Image 1 (spheres, rainbow, N blue to C red):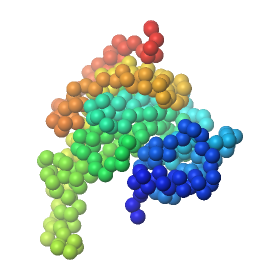
Image 2: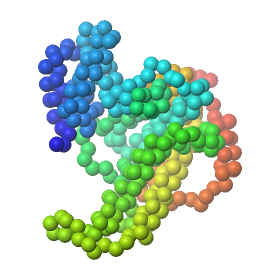
Image 3: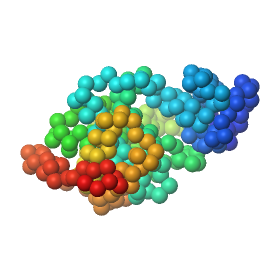
Image 4: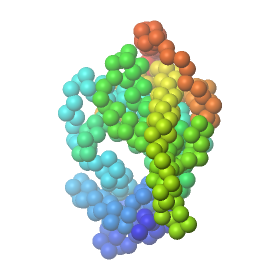
Amino acid sequence: VEPPDRHGREAILKVHISRKQLPLAADVDLNAIATATTGFTGADLANLVNEAALLAGRANKLVVAKEDFIHAVERSIAGIEKKRSTLQRSEKAVVARHEAGHAVVGTAVANLLPGQPRVEKLSILPRSGGALGFTYIPPGSEDRYLLFVDELRGRLVTLLGGRAAEEVVYSGRVSTGALDDIKRATDMAYKAIAEYGLNQSIGPISLATLSGGGLDESGGTVPWAKDQGHMVDLVQKEVKTLLQSALAMALHVIRANPTVLEGLGAHLEANEKVDGEALQEWLKLVVAPVELATFIKGSYMLPEKVDSTSLEKSNARILEKAEYCIPGETV
């Protein structure tokens, strides 16, 4: 059974709220909650209502408010947030810059792709699922069933934004914090090339179908395929090139926004969470370099390898020259 669409999710929410006779605050918009829960099943939505009610009860509220549903959605997506960070001070600094990197790169991508959802919240409080930080980008206002190639490229760059931030801020001394980001980016890049046919060198070919022998008229496989080892090697090469290009783009964005990266990262490190106007005051300063626009259009070619020592020195000079201040305040 496919997950319900937005209208179906709103109807399911109404049923569970009615059954529990939950009193809702005036700021609760069930349509907005349905929009934020793309992919949720009926059981997920029932658990969401229960979680929101429990959160309101623990806070001794007489009604279930918008923030209770927001926190319930975040718990469903990323796990339960711990009340305080258990990270060492040096680790908090790294995680804060990592999440700030996702936010900066994600915002630059959204600036180039109209209609894309924007970052709404950052946190460096660990979650029950093992995540050390959390960057929340909500679903779009409408259910989506297709992902276009420029959007896919934008997502790849955003996923690698945290790794790029660590590389720039710490002069190439990166951590293991990008583990999940790299897994997701690799999976997305592989599917783009081996399944969706979005690579010009490989062409519109399904590697799984090719290796499995193709399909007969009834949909079953036929044994005409030979060893496709050469094609696998070619796909792996193209996946690597795409990911290297995406990381290069993330680095371009980070280097173009040193003030925002360090200012937002420092703010997040000190406060452990940032959202609302405090977050948007930083993100409205983000600029998207021309290289990112070129990559998203599909025209970017990976440059020749740059000497790592000179690159690290360049990064250090950028950070040394940047002045960091809270937006709206004078230095």
